[in-house]
Length: 337
Image (cartoon, rainbow, N blue to C red; front, side, top):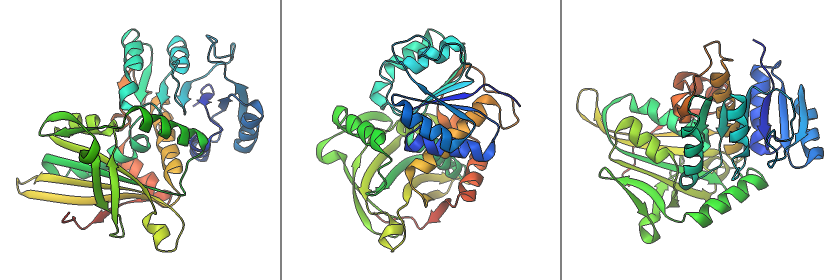
């Protein structure tokens, strides 16, 4: 199918480049517009990707400085505090996906959506790695009749920086929101101080000290599963693969407890592992979301609405693509911690 180019705002960065590569691998004929503040950097990225053009984004302009340039979707890879990309997407009636805001910053986007709910699909892409965590968790949850607890623990390798924009966004999130949104006994609370401290065991069994993190995964998974206890913890340390002498990787520990389909107690522990780091896995998920939004996967394009990534990602298809790229959803022995 022929569609207008996809606008990647911040597309020359680490995650934007991986997204473009994932799209190009599956859909070589889909054109891209690489938008940024530095034209030379955007041009270098466009030349490297192929079938792409570079533009300078003007967030103060109603048309972002694009003039009559047609686009089929808008993806924002940095914190767009002015909501320039969202307003542009709504005016053009094309899907919008932003991945960098914190759970405490979504009110402006929700308000903008509420005033034009029928304009186009809008995705709150703030889940950890934009759906890789939630899609995998919901796949595991299919073995449960009732989920009582979900504990997510993300281990980011010290060498897995993701580029300067990602580092800047993390610094902003940590500065603005030191407390961690958590669901405990059916009530949303904010963990801070000693209560925000946590620990888990990495894939190789190494004890890891972590801190609570306010990921939107908490509210999404609580709503999707009804689990009364949901928490997300984050650690920056040495990944299991690098500790064993290999290259760095990213890993997400997923621990569920509740009842199986026969009503018996069930506790599971899995890990999403990607051998090439967080940015590449994030790019894969963004690319798959664009496939679904635009109907590149052969199905009808997504209808206007407000979505979490896991509501659009086909879980089986995601796991298949993850495996094709060398990653996996690995079953582990439940921890006694």
